[in-house]
Image (cartoon, rainbow, N blue to C red):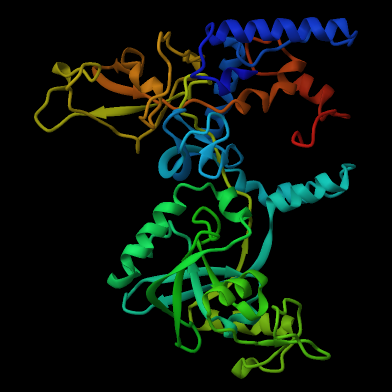
Length: 476
């Protein structure tokens, strides 16, 4: 339904358009003769359904699976909300062509990364199309490799951590690349490179992760700083490149241009050194392109003559002995950002204490009023009592987004701020994404009239799991 994606467009209230759209879809399905059991009809926007969506969130929160985090997101001031990577094209919103910037926002996230191994294991034996299984495995993106720490020359105590699946190529590192948002960029950039680096970082901040990684042309700028090779101690130049993402992995990569196609192209473009440290078991590698296959270690000191497998093991062991790295498993899978800054969505059933400056009596303060100096303590979230669900959206005449990342609900002061036991509190002003309700509808379909629980254990045991699900490739 268009309600979740159209908070700024004119027209009837979203509750009316949603009900109208549902009625129209239902009419069309009946005309087509589909034999659905309409007694089990559910709508994720119905207040009774919202109640159980919020209840599920509370169970996730209590289990430590719903947490707050500062996340670098695509923020669109014109639309007043965070956009997914695929909703940003060349720094502009897909809908409306509005400017989009990258900035850190306090967000609620669901810790799906805790289930990475279980998700991958669950793919075994599934009778799914091969393309869907491949996409799922790539989405999870399990990688077994090594974490490596590079000290930063001139910055005592600071280090750059990288992850690689090819520890055997460590002796071939000729530069290190940081994401523009890496926290060390500003401190290690030299004064003569500062203007150039700052401009590059600003430009990169206006591009989405998807836009940056899908671009064929890889760009970067030298910071003027150097990392120290963890084994040899040699100085290695540090670059900033927008093809490295701060939100993925460590936000830094060790570049081995002789054995990585992307690094080879980057080195050729910026005239950086190339050092060959792996050769084929038979024949010779071409100097005109990166040799990415396994082989025999060369130009690698004590590791010369080792096979790729043996060299990986020995380099990892050496780093562990030197306390400069070690074996590690990583995933491309990221935790699910579960916050939206728009009106249309389930209110997140969390509230926070409100504090006032020293000497101010809370009994005489009112954060609902203009000019009231106060602070919302976001570090002390409090779950809404289950007996008080559903937490309903306030009635608002103007729920258009503004330039405040707190969302339009922050303007509903009478709803946001409330008193309890003589103390002031503030409700969460983020709402859940449009997928919150649709993630579990098939369970509610089993028991749609149950007012005591989301669904009973008996119907779950009788009907689940689903034998056949018909939907698009994005539904698994």
